[in-house]
Structure formats: structure tokens, C-alpha cells
Image 1: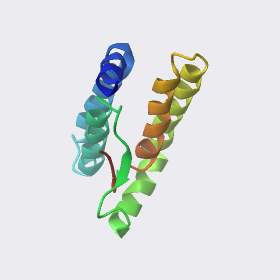
Image 2: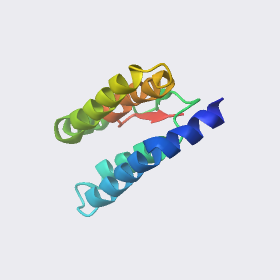
Image 3: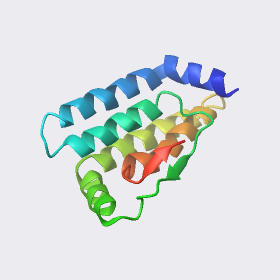
Length: 122
């Protein structure tokens, strides 16, 4: 079921969303200051390719001061918009019975979109 869910996810928007994350990350990496943010954006884009069967987990540096500072900057500049898109997409998909599994994936990606430093989809 996980494989089928990931294939349907890719066909119906997951691939384009992943491309958006990856190209956004590459754009952020044009500046030296944006490199850590670009890496996180690309990480989310790759994780967005196959979200079924995975969960958001904290990494070993999740509570470090640098991760917290970067997460605050991320939330202010990028994270709230990305999380809002996942929330709206999830609510729209949850209206139909067929869309509920995909809505769950969008809801699962909200914490990762809000604060990606110190978290990953595994």
C-alpha cells in the first residue's frame, strides 16, 4: 500500500511540489547565507517524493542552539507559508474520502515545513 500511495502521490502533485522545494533550495544556495536553508529545502523536497510509510523524527542535533536559531529564521521567512500551503492542501483533500490518506501526508509534512533543522522524514 505504501508503494502505491507514493506512486499516486507523485502523479497527482507530489513530484511538482518536490521540484518546487528543490528549485527553491537551489535559489537559496546562490548566496552564502542561504546555503543552510537551501540544504533544508532540498531535504524536504527529496522527502516529499515518497512520504507514505515515513514519519518525522528528530535528529541528534535537534535541540542545539544553532538549530533553534535557524528554525526561528526559517519560520519567519519561509516556514509559515510552506506550512500554510500544506495545511490548506490537506484540508481540501480531507473533504473527500479518497483524499484522506493524502491529507494525512500533508498534515505530516507541516512540522517538517515549519522547523526543518533537527528533523527529517525517515
